[in-house]
Length: 464
Image (cartoon, rainbow, N blue to C red; front, top):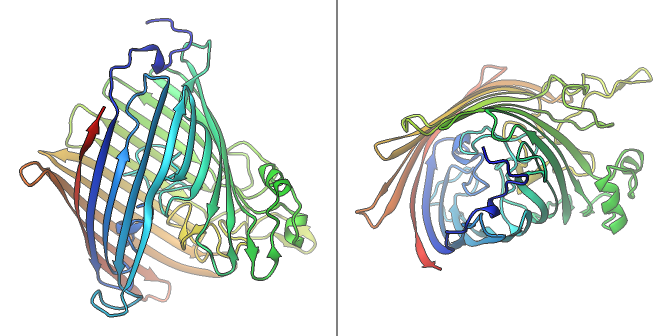
């Protein structure tokens, strides 16, 4: 073992080249019911419509980061998507069908030694495991469109100088704009910061811990008017301090705040690794370590395993989610403040809740109308003779909210297969089949089944 006091990639020779790629993708979705099956559109960065019938065409240019051994690297993308989708509860051929267009990605990123700077529309991904197999982070998942943002920090685990790679850290701060122009609160801003540490390095077992704090703040409310968009308000949001212009923010804190902590144990070998993780969610102060908060029994627990020796099953994820406790059923009662009824993702000022373009920024299992859930999630992927597959199944019990209880159960299932065919102009064909079934407390049921077909072409424009 080489005892390198600061084992960064830049210590090795740079033998890679930069390249620029093009991408084109066509997709079409069709399903029964009033909405498409959830597993077809959840955790797709908002690229697949939740309506029962839609079609997308995406075209773009991508410059990936390819040179980790150089003291600087850069990447970026411009990907534009046009979508034709049915209006609510209408057919695909209905003349009222809606056409929209948006930037799927529009960003630039540069790494200067160990510091990363990102500006533009690009997914925020600080979750554990494989995003293709995850049910979705409680704080920031891939469930909605990427937020326009500026992020500065250390994105990836980086060794601490002098500790020979056995202790690593990462962290950063983001300022973003929630420009969906919600009719109740528009021009809302977004704040996110995180810090994490990991110990173990080359040892077969690693332990990591991450602390994340995010908030909606500022903007203009149709009820409260200007919600304080000043620099002073930003610093108060940074520290979760009170202030602002409304009674609620003066008594509590400016903005709608969420805290999440992630504890992960990783065991790894030459061709495999296993992650066991625990993610918490908290909307109460003061800040306490994971497992010691009033709502400690709420959270997401998971196991993710990957191996590269046998391709038929390369990844497996099992997750359990619970958000039913919420620090108890009472916030205050008979003059006593209990601090319960947290009602995750909801806020009395930001009535759109923890959403962007109508989709939850956190777990797709939760919403303003249904934030008390218990869910089980299983996902597996692999490659069988060039056919890449993904199978996902979930079961959820919904309890509505403490303020509006409503019980139901739901089952979802997805099978996806993708195949790249070099003889057919090197196109990649994809087909996903999915099914949802929900049973309500009054024994009413509804279901939806559908398919998603994709056709993708990607190639090299320039290598330099």
